[in-house]
Amino acid sequence: MNYPNLPNSHLEITDQPQVKEITNELLKTLQNALKGNHLFTEQVELSLKGIVRILEVLLSLDFFKNANEIDSSLRNSIEWLTNAGESLKAKMKEYEGFFSEFNTSMHANEQEITDTLNANAENIRSEIKKLENQLIETATKLLTSYQIFLNQAKENANNEITTNKTESLEAIKEAKTNATTQINNNKTESLEAIKQEKQQATSEINEAKKTAFNEVLNELTPKVSGLYSGIFYIRNIIYIQGGWEQKVKDLSDYTLDKSKKYEIEVFFNYLSVKTLEASACFALKVQEGFLKESIQKLTHKYTAQTYHRNLDFILIKCG
Image 1 (tube, rainbow, N blue to C red):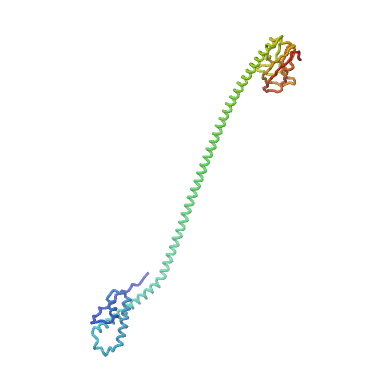
Image 2: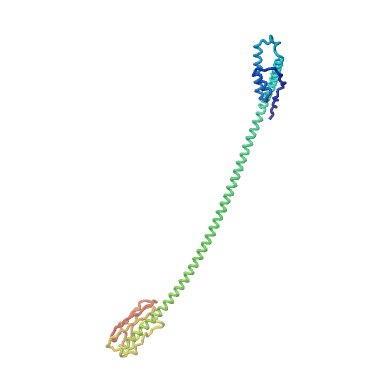
């Protein structure tokens, strides 16, 4: 933009002539203002006031009648004031021209200023748009990165969960297998132990029964007299402690009186292995026949059973 140069504020005024005595205060003030470094407007104002006062004084005096009495220094002062006024007028015209040129240049530069402002506003809007686009792009990148991070974290978590789940299932399966194996081993050991205990108990019971039976027979020996031959006769085929039809006890060494009463307790285990007939039974056989009190039917098949009879009888012929 083009601006006019500011006019020089210096006034081409010669030194004020010295007067013998200045009694007017306005003139003193004007003199001090012109000599001092005062504002230009203040100097002009004081100069104009001085000129007006001088003119008023001159008009009120009979200047021309008393011209010879005016001091030469006063005339010089008036001349100086006149010259100063002319210089001031010229400077004021110069300033008027400056302000006129300044206003003209301002009108000429108005469109340029408007265009510059509009261009600056457009540049500002363009920069704002760029910043908005950069912000959107940055936010999009951040959101994309965050989404990728979330997806990776989710995938890692799923993989970790799957791995832990697989390991847990395998651990549970292994623990279950170990527990099942341990249980089966313990069960087998327990069954074996129970079986052994059962066999041992059965053997001990059978041995105890035999011992008790022998003791009973020994106790009955003094009561037995006469000839007696008796066995436990098995009418149906059964399995008794390792053999088929078996004589449990031979009493032929003892003599039994037919007219006397005898007490015999018979106790043993047996297991039937074939189809039972309606008349399948146990019985005590003597020479005269079977003791009725000793007969016991066989009621089960493939089942361990016990024969137990307390025989209280008088030996007679039985059939």
